[in-house]
Image (cartoon, rainbow, N blue to C red; front, top):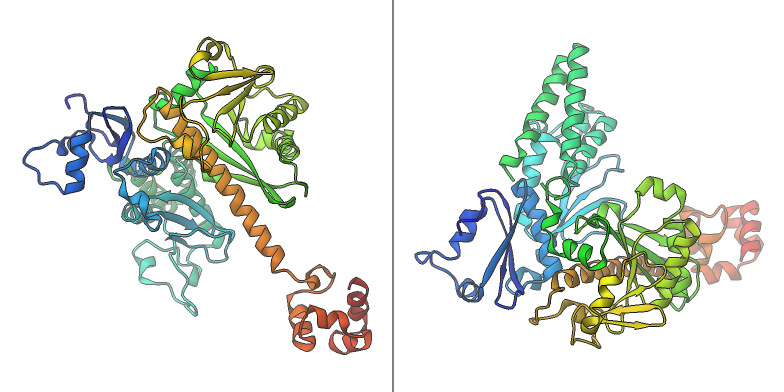
Length: 504
């Protein structure tokens, strides 16, 4: 108890076996954790049961409550602690939605992200915390929360300094979007860079005698600098990642030259070779970084290894390496064929990034002696415990004694049997599950679009208005196909009728 710091952070309650049974956040770690063990404090039955089982407590210090909010959510999703009952209710998770590309951008919270072109941040397990955070950030970066139809005058929120006032042109759309980009940067953990940018702009405005603008920027600057006294979403700037046991364990297990700050996970999803897609998820400092996720359409074929090769070849193109940088570790969802394909893609591009795959059968990590760019020396010396070698491939079972998982990730999650590699297991499971979810989500979107598309959609010159007119006149796409060119001409004109008849 004496070692607990007075800073904000995330704490981990553990059982005797070392299993993480509860993850929580705190504005002051010392005060919050001590509350669990105060005899005078009344506790509900769930908390009483939790306290009885706590054998050890660990923690990670962060810069602010806002940062703790994000980190808590990520750690709950990674470790799935038994006492975090919020995990049993998906409705508890919230996302921040920003439709930057709209002609009237808004910032809101939602429980269900859609493929609607907007940017989503999350999920967060504390809806109340997210809303409080946005309340604070709105004072620094004014934004609209919804669009009211027919609204022509600015609302009260504009006069309170909380809204851009687009209705009366008090702020230009360009300036408003620039303001939202700064908000997004803060959410993504780039607060230090934004502080420097605002400070530079403030000095330029003052030098140009634009004192009103300089004063506004000064107020933004002070508010941002005081954020750590209130409640930030990302640990990318402030968190000492050497305290993340999973990243430390991966570094030691594979003898990586540095902590894997950026890990990329890849998976393929398709249905019998149709609507084939690949996902690339990114974990920065052990935390999912959704703004860096990417999705790929790949060749229509039922060949996962070939599709992984194509995906990695595109990912490691010169343009993408320049745009996205290089990862410190690649995690491929699949077995030896998929791993071999990823290695061939690296050889074709001339890169040497450490790469492993995770086999679905027994949930084991697969490493190739020649090509994975990993020092397998310490794995071989410890092979009697959890490493098997076969034809130049090493199968690494990070949960000894557990095989034949029934679900997609049952084994990797483990239950109460704690092993040395539990932290590594949970992180790898989290990345693999996320890459699978993202791939399946994109595949489902494409499949739905294909199933609801019409043969009329592919005809040059036939847009949504003409398509609706044709359906209204002839009843269906089949009716259009059966119509004569003269009948089509009567509906849409002779020139387009000839094109439709030719295409159908």
